[in-house]
Length: 202
Image 1 (cartoon, rainbow, N blue to C red):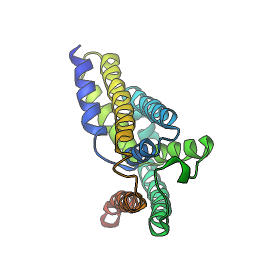
Image 2 (tube, rainbow, N blue to C red):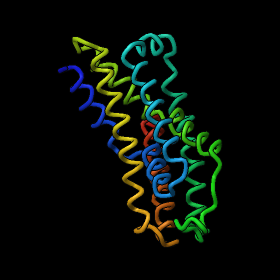
Image 3 (tube, rainbow, N blue to C red):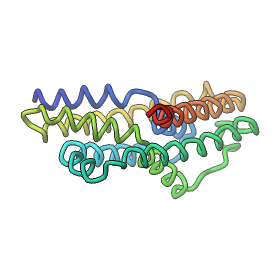
């Protein structure tokens, strides 16, 4: 049980930091659109990454020493493009959270964005694969530790998504929606810069 609680605590402490994936879950919760699918997809992807981190990350990093650089560049490019999309939405305005004025997005497109924000996000790999993998090596029961981390992931994503539903009234005005898009653009770009900035000084 000690390993389980260690995994649960570490998982929550890592995932609670607001990032591109969490911002997307929050946005979908506010829109009330495909929320269960988004939360489940994020949690399942996280579970896969955590499992790989606990049981096999060392092998892959040893065989592909340049993998970290490729992940950072690809992730930064995607985040910059998605941030630009959000900024355009902020300038255009006209959106509201009222169902009648909301342009629906297909499940396929929503799922594609959700998966991209997960698998093209190097921070997700660094947290779940590198850090969690390193801590798991010190645990007496890796499976219990992994179970705790996975429970933390499911708890957080579903909690964040469905708590965001309560913010609909607060963000019912188009101006508030513009501010959300603008803040999301800045967040995505800041994460992208943080990925490539250290490489400039290597």
